[in-house]
Image (cartoon, rainbow, N blue to C red; front, side, top):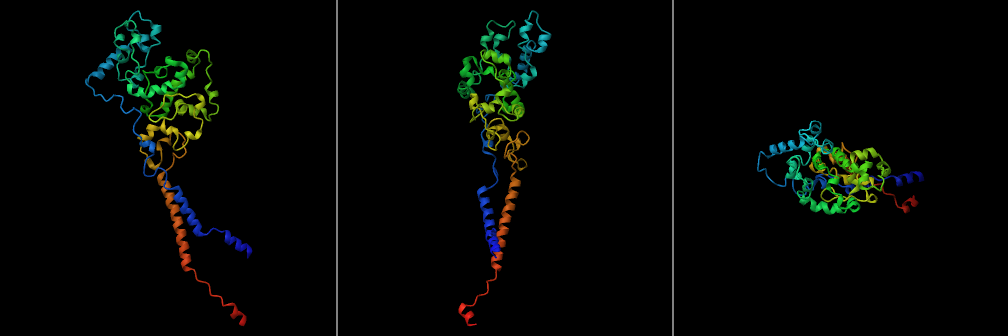
Length: 357
């Protein structure tokens, strides 16, 4: 009797089971992201600093693109590998020219590919031989990119590179203006990573180039410097250096390169549903994607990287929610039905009557 009594006392009552299930539903709420896209995917398109690369201008001369291609072809007739092999003019310094060549296709695919070479190099480079001191007349980046510079310049001057190297470190120290392409326009996170990391590894992956900037220092070994990082090869191939070595931006990728002590070392900072990669490398993919694709949350991530919560599916979650709710309702109805059918126990005769008998 005592054992049976104890078993009955510790066995969970249907009412408490149903109450627990309902409380769990109330605490957990609806599936994450149901009914709306993630907040970061609804952000305004800020990668262009409020304007497109055409500066809001319309084409005044419909023949201008063809003219630009012809002008640039004249420049590339010398400044290309073919120009070095088959120089169009006699008496050229081919050794020097070999260091000043460009790939025509890569240039045309870059952000500046629709511009004329002389837009930056000025008319001083049009005649050959080029005019004296032509190099001094090359336009700087800020002359065209004035609006972005208002945000980038103070960030750049706060970076560890500018603080250590000073004014000799410029935009062109990292960005190859002839072939660079904005990461948000590349379309593939992996290709964007390859391009941007190449800019960093130009110095940090080459002893000779590193020594030009810091002749008294030995270049740190990247593998040793990142020995704390699991799966180094995967991270180096799929994540940009800047994604860990800059603060989280409000608008676009920050140009403030932080000291190594302040770099991100928290795995959860990226490998989470609301991680930093969604505000950096994958920002445009999340913003432009159909968040309801197959019901999966943050669908663009599924084939790219592992992020906890990115494989959540609102329809599967709703099905689970409905199943749990139905279970709770069935338990409550069962409890109510048993209560209604319960037969009241027979009344026990008073003690005095039993003694009389």
